[in-house]
Amino acid sequence: MNRFLQSRMLRSMIPHFILGLMLIIAFRVTTEVAFFSDHISTFFSRLTPFLMGGILGYILNMPCSAIQRLLLKIQNGFVQKRSRAISVLLTILLVIALISLVLNLVIPAVTRSVVMFVNELPNYEQTFRTWIMAIEEWDLPEFIPDINEDAIFGAIGEFAAGLNMEAIMASVFAGFGNIATAVFQVFLATVTSIYILVEKDRLKSFALRFLAAVAKPSTYNAVLKYTGKLNFNFYRYIYTQTIDGIILGSLMTIFLLIIGQPHALVLGLILGVVNYIPYFGSIFGTILAVIVVAFTQGLPTAGVAAVIMLIIQQTDGNFIQPKLMGGSFSLSPLLIIMSVTVGGAYAGVLGMLVAIPIVAIFKDILDEYIAYREAKKLEDKSPEDDFMNFEL
Image (cartoon, rainbow, N blue to C red):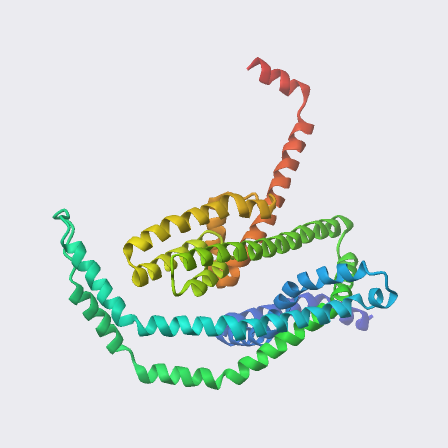
């Protein structure tokens, strides 16, 4: 009997023991936040190559899946059976070819443009002084202060002289010292992306089995529905922005070549790349291009360039891009600007890129919820309510 009472007493003390243990853990966490945050940040920093590999694998899966669909149309048992492996191999070869193209054509052209721009900096300074002198000759209102070019260039000179070159060189050497780590992380990310491409079907099957085992059927179906929409949004967005960036960058490059801009290729490339960021990207690229044209070819040419580039940009934004999107992202401009701003504040450039597809899926969920609630209210509405509303 005493043993029974002792056992019962011990069992009754277990919840108190667990509560006391949780309080001790909570106290340790609150008193040593820095310790836990350092370990958490270290843990996530170790996962960074694998996260980047996952993102790279997700992006590369688009051309890989397209190649696999083409291979499956070939009436050959050997090819169809090994379609995934062959598509992964062809995707890797395609990426290597693109990297070789960039290294042999794009980077040398960009380097030449940068060197040319730096060598012409003294001429650009004189051009800027000429602009200021021309502005000072205008009959401007009295409330506009005079421009003191000596003060402007003096401030620039003081800023340049105040730079700590020793610290800059130390940072440069430190960056070279981290090259081995960066190369290793790139290697891990690349290997991870290849494994993800090869094991995509198995990973997907495992995730579906796990979700079916732990979730209710309604939750399982909802997760499948919205993850499928999110995946479609990402694919459509990346595809659309890539094609649109190529079109916009090509049109801008052709126009800049027509007006004789020496940095046409670099500026067109920049405009095509920053086009991935809605609104802000194309605006930034256009302003940069107009400034470069102004310094290298003069203000009249820059004015003409600004008008033509604005026309090209508006044509792309109002006709070409919506045609490519196909109505996939029916978001208001204000919501897009807010999404890009918040995404950039929390996750930098990557946040800007993924903000639109994520907000689009949240908008779909909210629209469906509102429609469900409206239908529910109509079902619960009685005929007496309709009569009272009519009388009122």
